[in-house]
Length: 123
Image 1: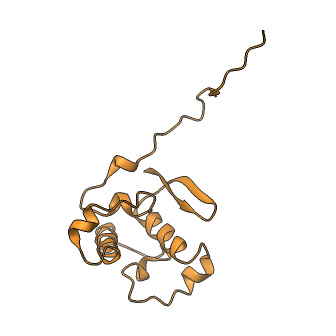
Image 2: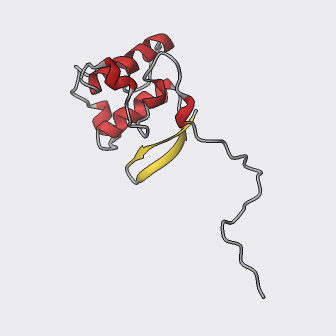
């Protein structure tokens, strides 16, 4: 899924699955330092065991962990989690039990012709 997320230089559009979304969230939380992600001391965070994206990890468990993190982020208020407005969070599309495609960015084919917004004409 192509989504727009926060980055250290503003925003970027990336393809994310649940595993990558967890890694991006941890990267964001650590101030975009991979070293901090690896050496994370927040072992009470629901994403802690999944932060490196390595090893055999069940997709259903990842989905459950994402929902747990989002609930934790919203102060354990389920209704607040469902009304979350942080659409640039990498976990946003995965916060519910159903994938939220409302934040999906359209794919632009590589071979599509470039179209300038302002056409210049000589006259």
